[in-house]
Image 1 (cartoon, rainbow, N blue to C red):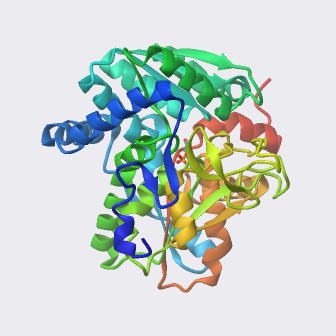
Image 2 (image 1 turned 120 degrees about the horizontal axis):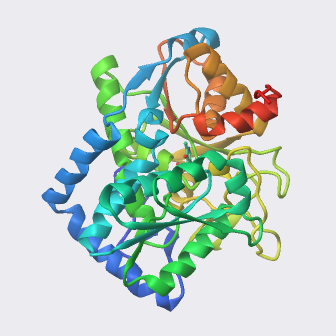
Length: 405
Ligand SMILES: *Cc1c(COP(=O)(O)O)cnc(C)c1O
């Protein structure tokens, strides 16, 4: 298990990533999960499935995305050369559509007529509503009432795409509660319904399947940097909510020991209970929403409330594969605070003419911190997981920029 090559072969057939992962669900969910796992294995090995997926990734979503040399950011920081993997340029504005598209193709093969999803920032809901419209399937998206307010524009987008958005008011009324509602729906309707889970989280086979649909990010990056620079990068940086953009970005480099991998979690207002979403800082190992992984819980094992400026990072558990990479030391995990992310958001906007998603701004904040100390011949690649259009109103309020009254 400590061999780097072995990392490419997790999870095992039971969905275990070393001691993490698994299928910790009520018995009623075992059957739909096993049906999904079987269908996925067949599809994954079917060249027709891969061809259809790749064609739509290219023509509908806009792959491959560019690897962009961030010249002015590099100049300003004065250290390593910085590249950005431009997932923000994908259709619907974030990496999420890689997975939503893969899963809806699978749902069609399985003969499902109805799609459900949960969403935090709204990006996964928008991606799911988009592919559901494209294939003419009924779509219901569960979203925390608080997130619906933070991301009002995405709610409108989903409704315009024909999806039904259901407000979830339980608990903190954010992503965690939306996942619970979606699982409840799935238990009742699994005969007709496929649940498109939005991150590398939850019970097996989701963490594996979602990762596989995002592996294209790292595969393209590897090819692009080798073509351009004739060598591998020194450091890859990605933000980590559930961990899907990060694992998709990292995966093609796992066996390259010279490439450092850093995941950046939401540090919120600092590492105090209830004020952040950095599971590897002040978290512990436990079982939550179907999987064994690092999470934020109090001494009694109750899930802690979380906070991040960014709805997409505001979740108490991390994907199980990241827990394994953390344990093996293959990837490192750090955090950026709300104010550091906000600063990085402005830096990229002004220097490069790119408004990043607040989630992606966490990865950029880390790059801004470490790049100056690296030498000019080193290469850093940050995954720009999404664009910042959805965050404009929130950022305007925080920076006190007047939106015309
Ligand atoms: C949802 C989202 C994230 C966080 O999700 P991961 O599964 O950790 O990738 C990050 N960036 C953007 C733009 C998102 O929409």
